[in-house]
Length: 201
Ligand SMILES: C[S@@+](CC[C@H](N)C(=O)[O-])C[C@H]1O[C@@H](n2cnc3c(N)ncnc32)[C@H](O)[C@@H]1O
Image (tube, rainbow, N blue to C red; front, side, top):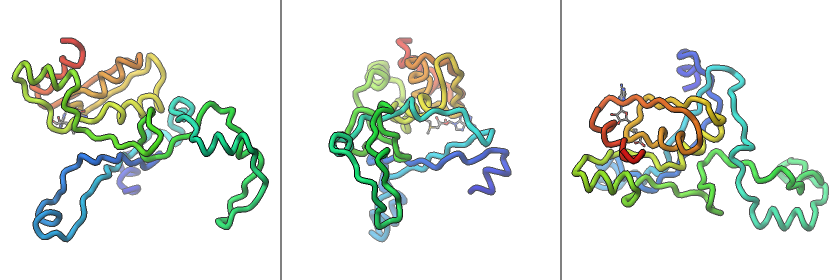
């Protein structure tokens, strides 16, 4: 994978994961018929960069501290070395940075536990308006939390966000809400047409 990315002229900045419990049990032959394999629930998200130092700032995607972290900060941490070899110093209990740095498993900004970001929303305005108009609903929409995380991490207000495989243009709608400019490219015109519903069109 890394060799392929380098050949394409990109750097692999980080591998991330999207936990998607709505993923279908596939390949059906192996999961539901032969009952050999178990269900895949994770999508790989490759964060690629054109430079070795991508523009990004994890302070834009901080999560609320856990109750445990808040308790630790109150109680204070003794300097010690964990069995794993990691040194824990008194700076470990400092919580002045405004939140905890998220993990590379995509999490809901509002939830305390690991996000279960399904992509099967059935009652968002886009889906409701598609149904009312008898227009085909895009079958593989992202949950908004997925592009939202990366738009916040990688861009600032006024920056340009480009989605070359836009589908129902979840990314564009998120970018617009966050004050970014956007360009959406999509092969099938009917998907682009329906994506207007995300913008009151
Ligand atoms: C997984 S979907 C994207 C869904 C989108 N993230 C959303 O939330 O609606 C991928 C889309 O890429 C489009 N696509 C595939 N090949 C393409 C190409 N060569 N150029 C532009 N779009 C393409 C497909 O028609 C499909 O709508």
